[in-house]
Structures are given as C-alpha cells and as structure tokens.
Image 1 (cartoon, protein in one colour):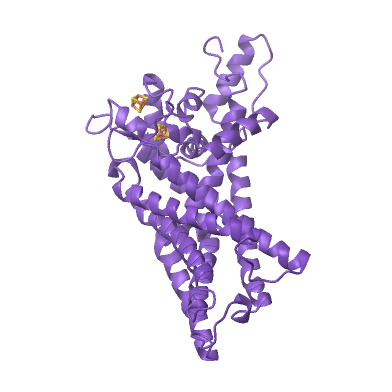
Image 2: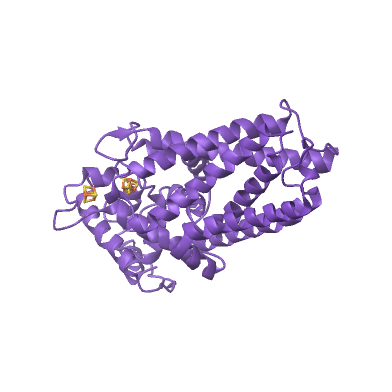
Amino acid sequence: MTPLDMLTREAAALADGQPAVPQRVIPIHAASADEAEVARLLQICNACRYCEGYCAVFPAMTRRLAFNPADAHYLANLCHNCGACLHACQYAPPHEFGVNLPRAMAKVRGQTYVAHAWPSALGALYQRAGLSLALALAAGLALFMLLALARQGTLWPTEPVKDFYAIFPHGLMVSLFAPVFGFAMLALGIGLRSFWREAPPGQVTGAAWAEASRDTLGLKHLGGGHGEGCNNDDDAFTLWRRRFHHLTFYGFIACLAATACATAYHYLLGWSAPYGWTSLPKLLGVPGGVSLMLGSAGLGWLNLRRDPLAGDPAQGAMDRGFIALLFFVAATGLALAGARGTPALPSLLCVHLATVMALFATMPYGKFAHGLYRAAALLKWAIEKRQPSRLKLAQD
Ligand code: SF4
Ligand code: SF4
C-alpha cells in the first residue's frame, strides 16, 4: 500500500466518523523506469477514460489515483495486449503525451515473469536469452538421445517398431520427465503465490471464482469489449487472435489429458502402450495435437503481422520461440502417431521428447506463466470489483 492509499483510507474513515486506524504499510521497491511509465500513462488515462469499456484494465484503473509497482504488475497482467487502446488513442505517438499503453504494459508484464520467477536467476536468464535457451535445450536433448540410440544401433531399425517402450524403457522415460514436470509445476506454483501476495485483493468468493473462470476460459476480453475482436496489424477488428488462443489452449489441455489417461491406463489398469486409434489417449491426443498445431501456427502468423508499436520489441524473439516450441511439440507428436511401424519412429521420438522437455523446463519463465498470472489477475479483478471503492470520491 502506498502512502497515498494509506492517507486516503484514513481520510475516508475520518469522514465516516470512525477512528482512523493506522494502515499496515507493505514495503514496495522503487519503481523501475517501465513501471513509472505505466503509472504516468495510467494517470493520463484516468483523466481521459475514453477506453473505459475495452477491457478490465480501465475500470480497475479508476479505483486508484496513484500506481505503485504492485499495481503496475497487477494491471499489466490484466492487459492482454489487444492493442485496442493504442488504435483508439488521440494521445498516441506522435502526440507529445506519447500514450502507448499496450507497449508499456507488455514491458512491465515481462518484468513480472522475472520478479516472481523461482529460482530468480533462471527467470533473469530466460528473459535475457529465452529463445536461444529453449532452442538450445531442445536441440541439445534431441542430439543426446539420437546419439545414444545410434550408439546402441537402434536409431534406424530394420524391423518395424511399434512400441515406444522398445526404444526407451517406460521407467527411463518416467525418470526423465517426472522431475522436469514436477520442477515446472513447483516453480509455477511459487511464482503464482508470489504474484498473488504482492497485492492481495481480499476474500475470494464463489461469485468471483465463477466470473474469473468464465472470463479466463472464454477469453472474454479478446472480444475487445464489443465482441468484434481486437486489433492486430491495423485499425480493423479481428477475432482470429481469440480463435487461435482458444485452439492453442484447449489443444494443450487435450494433449495433457491424453498423457494423463495413458498414465492411468499404464499404472491403474495395467494396459501398456501402444493404444488403438479409438482409445481415450488417441481420441484426446490426436484432435488436441491438431488443435495445438493450428492454434500455434495461427498465433505465429498473427505475431509476424502484428503492429510493431503494440508490443515490446525486446520480447518478440522470446514470444516467437515459445510459439515455435508449442508448434514443434504438436507437430512431432502427430508425426509420431503416424510413424508407428516405420524406421523413422526412434528419431522422431527423440525429437518429440526433447521438445516436450524443453517446453516443460522453460514454461515457468515466459509466456506460459502469463496465462496463469493473467487468470490470477482476472480473479483479483473479480474480487476487487465486488468491494466498495476505497477512494470514496463519489457515490459508489
Ligand atoms: S489510451 Fe488514450 S484514449 Fe484511451 S483512455 Fe488512455 S489516454 Fe484516453
Ligand atoms: S491493450 Fe487492450 S487489454 Fe491492454 S489495456 Fe489496452 S485495451 Fe486493455
């Protein structure tokens, strides 16, 4: 809480005839240049309010008079970079006010991935060289596995191979993936808790949960506030960003569900892979893989055409690296399903496993973390909007 928030609360209490209870001050680090820029722009927007209906950022902004770094982190993750407020703004560059909220928010959003990353050194490393790190990890792991198979003489078998576990034993795969997956989940959980605690919004209610879940799962704000979509490369509205996000998100979830089903088949029912085309892992995994591939390809295409003013140029390579990794995970997974019984199966399996492992290892530090922080920011907003305004400037 800033000193201004503290004084506002005390003044409101005195105006209500109540004793002014001294407020607890949460230490806040000095604002970075990017956080200060977000605060400057939001103070202009707070006076203007033309974009009020576009997304949740603007109503959340009107509940504040000043914006500390914690507010900037919260609002930056409430922003989904639709670009609408840039295309609508009469104070956008080249105006002397230079209002470019999507870019300022994108810069601070990138900082939140580092600020809440665990371990923090990995967050900073990914921020500096995310694309190279992800690609080097995938290539290095693939090469290692390819060489291991070549050494065994099983890289290009003469007999058809249908079973993955004939290439890499099941126990070996579990011992490789379980620690990486467990680490990724732990790091994401710690980051999410840190993000939540930075600016706790108050009591979580069922209604707030329901609204935040609906807005998150339906990507409500990618409708631009009017349902026609957001801006990508020009002033025209498009719903393709929302559609490709949906394909990517639900495709990823279906692939995860397919893996969970296959694990349950193996350990609970004693049914070993390979599974038939009508089995649950295949019924979830194949459409999930197609959806993930189409969604990530579409997001990559939109990213390349995106108005360069609307994002943070420094994060472009990191974003494209993440999208490319998702695409390769889906493409190699589908190729594997079709390569059963062919000599290409072992090498495809190596490439697929390496890309999946690189994705898991890097997911707590970039765009994937944004999905979780954004859902948390929407929940914070759903809680906050149900509370009376702390400013008490007028009838609330
Ligand atoms: S982005 Fe521009 S038009 Fe929109 S509220 Fe801010 S100052 Fe006003
Ligand atoms: S870019 Fe879109 S989501 Fe972000 S503040 Fe502007 S209108 Fe809201």
